[in-house]
View 1 (tube, chains in turn yellow, blue):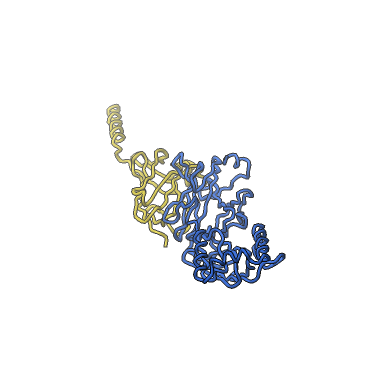
View 2 (cartoon, one colour):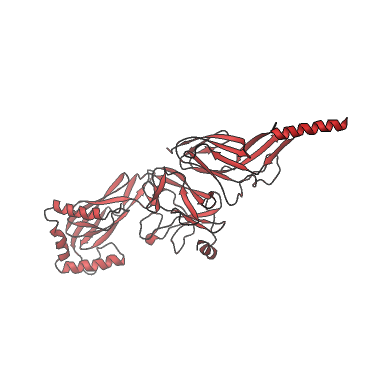
Length: 147
Length: 288
């Protein structure tokens, strides 16, 4: 009886794992560097003036039935319109910009590294944070010329 | 080479927003820039000034729209260097060409606002650091002297500085146009007339007016030409060795009866004709 129950349970786990059932990905933009002209980049949206750039660390968390944990590998940040907004990874140190994993573990600044986004020309683009192809965050960003 | 200089020189202090490198403002010898002192040496109240290159780690507070400037980069990660020309291991690029673009080997400020300059590593297609500069429109021009007396046969150098609407001094190599708008038979422009300064030569007694336009603003300088130059004359204000040498020549010319001046005036007889000749000199000095 116990053996049969374990078999069923393992089967369910295998099914859930194979289909990604119940897994969700979220991300926060941590350590957004200051912009001198009032431009902003937040979780819910951004407004940048042409020519402005800011760096940030995307902290990605995966949640499923078994709990949550931070994802540090295969994080990709992309933009829907490179003519409006561009993004690239930052090389070098990440000192001072990590804030720790969301579940409180880890030292912080190794979680995916830093990225920099910069505004090219007026328009609207979507900034997308993904982990292994799973969308964790989308941020609509409006770019306008400076006043 | 950059790494070698970095290894032998002072350790770069990070000035970029991301703490990975040092941005600096190079000064071009001979060009007029309020961020630089004479002789192309950068002026830095707090930053390090390289005694060889004259560059400063203190970037100007605000640069003039319409001016040219450069920003260099030194990585504290690997000692690699970069410039706006992209001829080094890093390339310093404007975040948007709507605010500045590469022009004649330097960046040309195009409109007011803040601009991020990104230090790219072409080999990794990544950004190592960034820094912000601010541009402001020229609201006024101030000549170093509104009125100047130059002995006939002598040369002098006039210059202007630009301010924004808050009267803050604007840095950058100004792109201007100098012309002799009155008395063009009295004063000639020597050499380039497209920067913040211009060299003039007084050729005949009388008054002349030089007009200079930088961006959308302009100002005038009144030039009095009177008397020939004599040895020991203290009236010549330009003080470099080259000018002194020219002053000597001019003095000799004057003592010889102003042959040099007369020769120039030969084409200036009749006033209007002289104006055209002077304009020709002016136009010929333009470099774009």
